[in-house]
Image 1 (cartoon, helix red, strand yellow):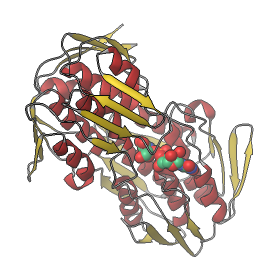
Image 2 (cartoon, protein in one colour; image 1 turned 90 degrees about the vertical axis):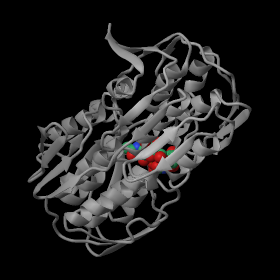
Image 3 (tube, rainbow, N blue to C red; image 1 turned 30 degrees about the vertical axis):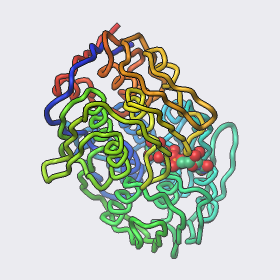
Image 4 (tube, rainbow, N blue to C red; image 1 turned 30 degrees about the horizontal axis):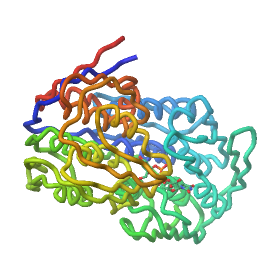
Length: 418
Ligand code: UD1
């Protein structure tokens, strides 16, 4: 198992380009199941979750793989299987997104239920509610969702909660349904918007892209498309916070600043200078961060996927901070590890109260999930002494060669294969 060995204390400096968006590309690969022609996705990150999605598509009898570095090609001319098995789905919840496209395209799907997850129960009731509303007969048997529909029919659905992958799953299915589907209270995350854009490029008829109400006019077939995936907004924000916690000066290139408004606001509130130009987003850290209040929320609110990383900055800030996690019920698993590095954080339910300390100290720490791992790496870079981050396979799920990007900025971080 790999670990990162980090010697903290170097202010990061220079410029860096994040990889393409992992979450966007996972949905786009699921969407490729709808297309009769080739779907080619450029600027695709070489992360482990993507390999998992490639394996799932292959299990469905689809030709999927890397055409070249950074480019994935999916040829779903005729999926020969409709089953996404437990052993793959349990390793990555986003695999559940093949359900909607499979029913729409093949009339039948058998997809393992993803089960719980470290950060919360993460139900899929909204995905199923949407597919049922589209006319699919959905049964739960032996840990699997079995769904049938000769042809889905348009419907009017209001999501109980704005769910990202739930919106994407139902939206993809609606594209091949007969008639008009209206989806309300959909998630507004940029990954949903990007999916709408790509589906439209495939021949889907979607109105309301970027709003909370999508109107889909079903079509009978979709064709292939070539698309360049947008930069990963969470990786971009993670690199900016890495600059902030080390007292650095870093420009992140190629990211879409409009996707990061809530994060940039909070970084500024904490005292760093952030400027946006054509070249990128530049962060110059101030003397010492100041405490602030953060509530995670669906987009355009502060992303839950940045909560753990931001907490490192607040752990080092002058004055107290309060972080409330409203999206997932158990997303403070980084807190005990940060405490071992000297952070003063108490958790009560969904709220963490942070008393800033002047410095953190290196320690061996354990990565528990993707974003928690990223926060430990940032804490290591900001600490005095050496930090070993164990179980970095979590971080490899969603950050491509993060240690190389951080090293290129002067961070002393190396991967050790034990
Ligand atoms: C996606 C992202 C993940 C991010 C999350 C929230 C991908 C692959 N993953 O996950 O990185 O942390 O959005 O921004 O894009 N919910 C229900 N019923 C459902 C579905 C969701 O109650 O059927 C609840 C969840 O428990 C959670 C909230 O809705 O409280 C939002 O979750 P959701 O947007 O679905 O997260 P994911 O799509 O799984």
